[in-house]
Amino acid sequence: MLLTTLPVISVIIAFAAGADYKFPNNFKFGVATASYQIEGGWKDGGKGESIWDYQTHTFPNRILDGSNGDIACDSYNKIDEDIRNLKALKVDFYRFSISWPRLLPSGFANEISEDGVRYYNELIDKLIANGIEPMVTLYHWDVPQSIENLGGWTNRAIVDYFGDYARICFKLFGDRVKTWITINEPYSICEYGYGNVITAPYYNSTGIGSYACGHHVILSHAKAYNIYAFEFRFKQRGRVGITVESSWWEPDSNSKEDRTAAENMMQMYFGWFLHPIIKGDYPPVMRLRVDKKSREQHFPRSRLPRFTIKEIIEIKGTIDFLGLNHYTTFMAKSGTDGPVPSNINDVGAILYQKPEWKQSAREVFRLVPWGLRKLLVWVKKEYRNIEVLITENGYAGKEDETTNDIERIEYYNLYLTEVLKAIHEDKCKITGYTAWSFMDNYEWTDGYTMRFGMYYVDFKDPNRTRTPKKSAFVYQNIVVTKKIDTSLDLHEFLH
Image 1 (cartoon, rainbow, N blue to C red):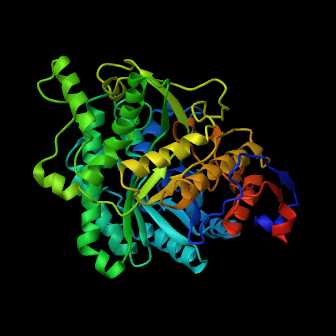
Image 2 (image 1 turned 30 degrees about the vertical axis):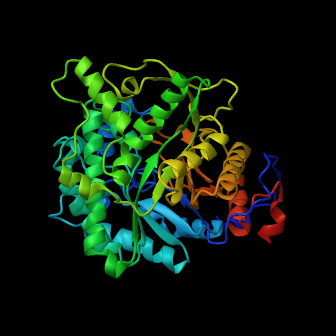
Image 3 (image 1 turned 60 degrees about the horizontal axis):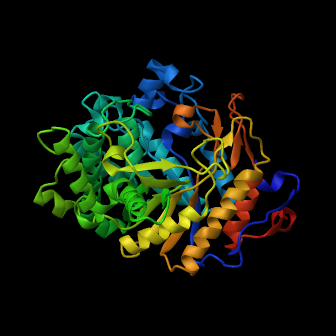
């Protein structure tokens, strides 16, 4: 359903100062999804098994509603409908991910799926034909189970396997795809997948396996970046970045101890991945604290692996832009928390959120818009005003949410206002914004109990009917006008 087919609705939104600013003319807006969360077609065309296929089929009790992504939004069969809806939003780009096991069913480079190539070629070609730039993420959490059987991201061999996969993607699609993101949210991959038994593959190796995972994620990113730089960039003229997620951590007080705890969170959460990629090695405070804690815990060597001199040279500077995912803010105070060993214990911080901060359906995703601006300013100062593309930001609605998603509109308006302030007042180099998500989808361990989309998806309907929510109209207006309206009459721009 196109946006122009809905009845006219008037929405009046009030929000903080800053709405008079406009986004620069070259600022780009988009929406995002991930392969496992929307595609479905879990074994169609000979697709291989991913860690999420394996986990949801083998241990359905690990998912809140016992569901899986076998069909999800059925985007595997609904390219044309998705393209129509994207075009109706008038977005500049669409960020989606390639399913590693759909393209390489065995997980390895010995077999390329003709159907996988067909599917992604069709999607890319139709996006371009409709004036929408494809922005492709190589890895968004669905590693092939065949590689996971070898230890996944904790096995050094994955660096070469990921490089093989990246090379094939660049070769097949790089003539048309000019913006690549290697890996999405490395902290979540490693800390929640290999350290805290929260997401697939559900390892329980906090402070050890999680650091091994992070080490190999960084090396894998650099491997893919260097393959592109040396083998493809001259002809294809594209760019390669990585998406790193981060909340903002606000000091609980102005004491030196609390300010240090908050800064350590930034360095050892966000900087854990970005610092090596930009500067060649882990943040000094991270190296110092993990080494010290490891000795105190009687480990024969640091739990945080070391890069060789050769690896430091290969890693340093492997970034053309930073993809930044952000959802919320926490308070941080000095203290010891978490299991021993663990990243949070190594940091030396206690985190909490203020009860007066407005909640979303995901309890920890509270609305704290000013945190995004503070994070952007921190990135500017720490990393010499690197170009930032906000690759995810969005609001979690409840399962029974309908198209009347006023809270999501409030979220986008408030957070985008902070982006405007960061651009105009703080002179941060922010070139784009990506709303999460294009449509309701399979929300990992929450299954279908949570909605992030601008399009409502009826998961009880075999056709997976999509219907635009009110937020879709508001976002469309922002995309077109490069401005946030304090009082928006949808009739004015829909007709």
